[in-house]
Length: 59
Image: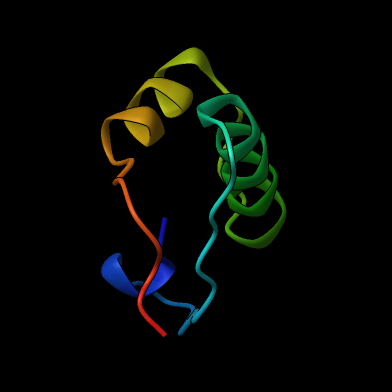
């Protein structure tokens, strides 16, 4: 997940990668709730998983 793909009020350059989808989901949920103030809901988690991409984030 690359925050740069989702422009908003915060100019965030964080890109997250993990060895498993579960690990990535936990990292993105933590980032989204702490930095952006999103609520950790089943709908939020479902939307995140839909946005997962395979491969390494660009440098």
